[in-house]
Length: 254
Image 1: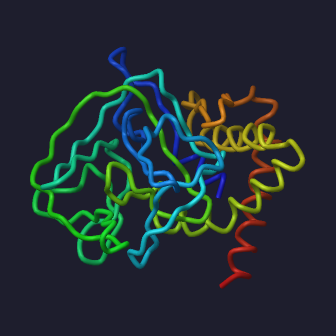
Image 2: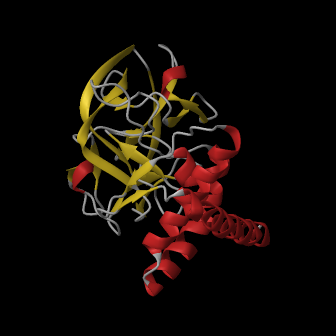
């Protein structure tokens, strides 16, 4: 859901060499596949586009890019490089992807040579496993993380990935379509984003006198900063209410 999304998909500035490797993102020149079958750079996709994704059972379909996706093309990031026999995937250290026979979601930093990644096979219309043959690191421009509306695992550079942990993806797949449709219809997406940023910052203020509150760069061009302290409690209250409502929806659907 948006609160979980915001707190887990932040873009955190590191040293003057670029951004820290803790950001769950892909570089600008990573490739996705549109519903038309055409490959496209990840920095060219827009909210509402459909890109190739994998379902939990390994079947392939096209899921919709949400406006809650994050994108920041004008920065440099540090990436883990995972190579198989046929492809190379670059993603930040804390980005999730399914690994092994049971497709357990792991951070890229925890993937080792010999483990199985899952690649899209057009011939079988499903995921097929390939072993990691090399692990490296690299710097590249851009930080992009497509959140898919219905919980699909984005296929990036031919490899199935995940925009978050399994519980959060499951919750987002229920909450995001409802919340996005509502805020788009009422023109309140940016205020809601500000409320979420305020909630995250308010929580951090509970544990630190000098919290590192985030700035969010969304795929539709919106940039949201954490508001001043007087606005934090109001934002926290709104985001908590959103969380409770989404949780109720999720339980009702089970």
